[in-house]
Image (cartoon, rainbow, N blue to C red; front, top):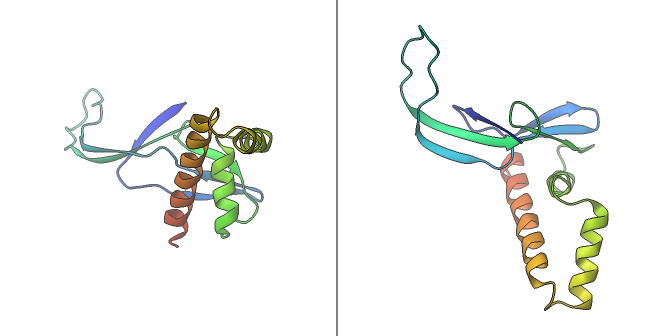
Length: 125
């Protein structure tokens, strides 16, 4: 995973016809002081927005054919952590033996709620 800090919060943008690049796993860093290059003027500390993703810029490319559709964006974010097969297995585990798979279900459900919140913020909904 790659991390990058920006001066402004990032969201997502269309990457190509069927993908978006989104900036997930945001960490806000107060008084961020970037490394100084030799001979460079000192940079005043600022509030930094750090993102962690597989791309060099901290982004994550996600399959999403309609970046204006909240459900599509939520699903794209969920797929960064769970494949459809994994998601279906978690549902089967939860339905067949909720007590044994309670922790797995909670982790999955927390990620789905995070995906919904992120998508709403990205789409201003």
